Image (cartoon, rainbow, N blue to C red):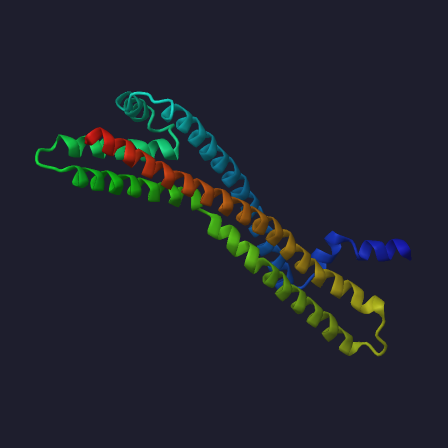
Length: 227
């Protein structure tokens, strides 16, 4: 008897015997969880790489190398450079181009340089922030999707008692158990997504602050050279 009850309340049996809407909810949450973990690991590696590349470029930049040589190095390795190096490349290229044009004063040259850096900065930030909105959506919506499956499952479970003269816990336990699995799956999808989103959003904000500080510092360096 105990073996039969255990078998009937096993996880696979409960999922297989759940109603179609609850199974669809579970399948959706499972797919969402897989996608969420995929983006979690992708963002982890991409943000770590961005931080590492920014650290390395700042170390080289503040050692005071020739900016022309640094620009040539960034241009030759454009596909492997980091975000900060691409911001430097865009700004320095615009600075040199504007400086060579006759009749342009320093303020006009620097305005063009800052616009070029700002445009590249926006593109880099778009790349770093990509898929964070998906993690935020998963974290906020998944519990409610799981709750919908739970409510539907419990509703079916109690509807099934209409044909039973005497209800016992044995009649409602399987239905309630299969319904609660949907809530558990919703939390399983939501919790990692929320933790990852908060962590990565913080890291991206710190990178954004570093990039903005670097653009201001580079602008000061270039303005001194143009004077």
